[in-house]
Every structure is written in structure tokens, then in C-alpha cells.
Image 1 (tube, rainbow, N blue to C red):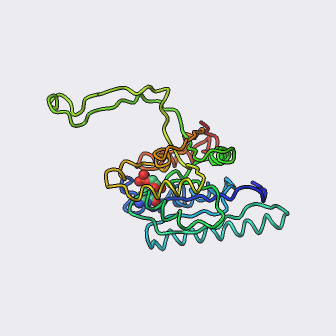
Image 2: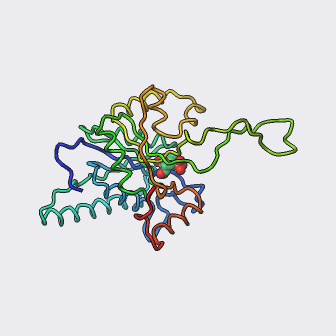
Image 3: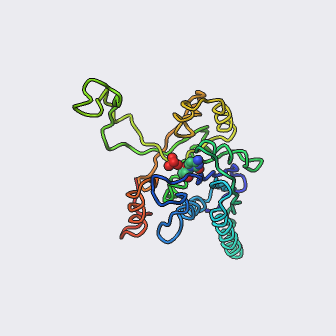
Length: 272
Ligand code: C5P
């Protein structure tokens, strides 16, 4: 994608510092092989292909030499491609690929990356490396909403299951079943939230600074960046996500991701 020089300076934070315990591979999730490359490399390719980032800042497990090397190798790949296309007269954006040591929680990893963004950055997209197959169109929809004036924007998909709330701690009927239903959420108003989540940088920095004083329970209750911005009272807009943007979390997700990459239709053909 050719990006005009007047475009806002956008950074993408790629959080890849998780342990990947639920995937059960005995290694950080970002290193787990997917279709012959690591999950991190697929995620980096997706971010770069979107053509919106001036900087890709990757939060990796502290001091991990292998993931740092993968980022450096990817940066060299981008540089070589940029040199090749420049020789053909194309004027594409060459993102700087940088790494930071992630923290104990996802929010800590985001905070570490926020403090390492280049001066002049106006917008930031925070993306889970675990959503390695997110299509370019989702990045574009998020970036377009920011350009149109949103301070916060998230990609969402409709929920197909009926969602109920339960009380997992009820006492009297515990010999009948482990939980009891307390309500049914109206499905037409529910959305499943994905990444990349896009923000005006100053707004997201303010939201994360406000969260530094949270106690353990409050911090644990925050499961995405948009929630922090909501808590400050800012509007959060929603754009269409994509079903292939699944968060690779369990062994089944990895099988699905492999299938999407190798299946007869290919991942780029699955929309919505
Ligand atoms: O653990 P979960 O699946 O919610 O992680 C979502 C994303 O956040 C993953 O890409 C993971 O690598 C990242 N993460 C992180 N630092 C942590 C925990 C998770 O960068 N301490």
C-alpha cells in the first residue's frame, strides 16, 4: 500500500510476551510453529501487509533472544523488499521494527511498548500476536475510523451463541449442577471483541497511566485496552472484525489456524 507523506504517524504495538500455557507447547505462544513459520512471524507479516505502520513495536518475553532475532530477521526482510520496490519507483512505507521486554500482564506489556514509541506518533493500534491471521482489511477499517475522528476503535464480530450469566458459587443446589443461570444477555446487542484496537496515542497513554494505581482485582478485571478508555468516559467505536482473526489460545485454535492457512479456500478468502 502506498501511504502519502501527510498520513498520520501510526504505530502498531504487537503484544507477544505471553507464556502460552493454555496452548500447552511448553514455549511462549509467539514461538509456536504455524504453517512452517512462528505465530509471531505470521502476525508481523499481517501488520506489515496492512501498510499503515511507521513503527511496529513488539513486546516479547523479557530477554528472549529467539523472538528478538525473529523480529530482526523480519526487519531485514522488510528492508530488502522496500529496496526492491523503491528501485521500481514505488514509495511504500518502511516500518521500523523495534522490541521491548514485555511485563507480567498483557497491560504491563502494552505499557512497556507505549513508552517506547517514536516521538510524533499520533495513532496507535494494539494487536495480539496471538491473532496472527488478522486480514489487512481489519487494520484498514480501524485506521480509517481513527482518521475519521474516533479516539478509540475496536473490531468486533456478532455473537452466534446465546450468552447467559451464571452464579458459579451458589450453594443449595450444588448437588444438582455446578452453576445456576442468573440471566440471558440480549444477543443482538452483544459483540465479541478482537484486535487490533486503535487509539489516539495521548488517550491510550492517559488510560494506562490511570490504571497504574489499580489493585490486583481491578487490574485482573481489565481484559482489553478499550475497557480502560471506557472507564475514563471516552467513546469507543466499533468496526467489523473478521472470523479468521481468531485468538490462537488452545490446541483447537491452532488446528483451525493451520486449516485456514492450508485449506482449499485459503485464509484471505474467508470474510466476515
Ligand atoms: O493471554 P492472552 O491470550 O490474553 O494474551 C493475548 C496477547 O497478549 C498475546 O499475544 C500474548 O502474547 C500477549 N501478552 C503479553 N504479555 C503478557 C501476557 C500476554 O504480551 N504478560
